[in-house]
Image (cartoon, rainbow, N blue to C red; front, side, top):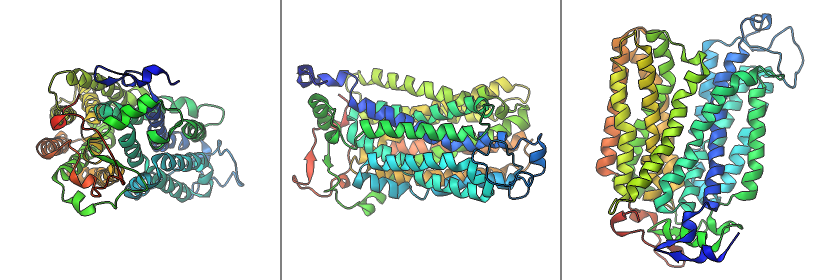
Length: 497
């Protein structure tokens, strides 16, 4: 409700800055958007355990298409069928999502900038929800049909990160960008934790393992209703925002010029790819994803072969690193606010110190992990959890730097770096396969961890040296007052107020 209070400016700050506002609602909706995206991303890996129950005669008698010959016809729920996939087929099913995911990164960011993040996320999540619900039925046509469905889901979800960045660029005041970005993107850990922790119980329900997909898809359609009713691509378009909050956002979201989607100048590709601040951002995103996905995909094998601890068999152990990352990300938000209160604390220092925490502390724990004795599994699990958990600090570092550099083209920048970073995450297991010939060799695994640590060190070093938080000149190539909305500078030299 709009009151006179929202129109008052006191002590240099708009009154609405201190209260829960419509901008926070957008981020909470994005939180659940990311939560479902990641839950749907990992649901196949946990469902594969339930749908390949080899203790059943049905699984043992399946054909190479995955359809049991003893159960002809089309079963809508497909809850009584089990499948006996080969390792190659399982790998293809899990990889198919990422092949689609990298294709729509850059186009998704561009479309979100031109036509609005609300529309992009609505269609993207809607298609992904539908694909999720159809996944169990598609298996009745063979595993290739499910692989195609997962590829299409990857296409639909590829725009989620770029569109979220495009939305944040319009909705987040500069000194709240880290906090609001963390609120949005921590949904990824939340969705992963919920899926890993509850999938076993869901699979044991009346509908069986397909209910993992049905319940997840249903949640997506419920989210779409709330998104349609309470979201908007820009604060200017939202029907419920108060005048005070609107003024606070538009006056403080950028020290450059926010251009409307209709009048946005063509993407300055040459300037972007010749910009050192952007190139350093690209490198640190790639090195981060290399280390992060190397851990998530290879650590279960390492723990099982070296320490004889099967992480995948325990929901608590599987979700523990994600839970710690979720909790620590909000701790870092609080710490960032404490640091911001110090006089003269620059936005640049804030970004780089948290990025350093999120890279160089995990770098040290990775090195230490390679030297943990084989009879000390608890210490190895602790270091693994620390490595993943501390990386939550990067939500306040490079992960929102795209918006710092270019609020107008933040979606496109995120699409470029996230596309390249996901290619790097796909390369990680290939490199591990070349280094680790004997999975029981501590020395070979140590080389893998040292390589990941080197990536963390180099990526963050380049970001610290070349990274910037000032809006770049190419963000507003069209210097025309009729084409742009003039923002208010945050503070001299990029300082946080």
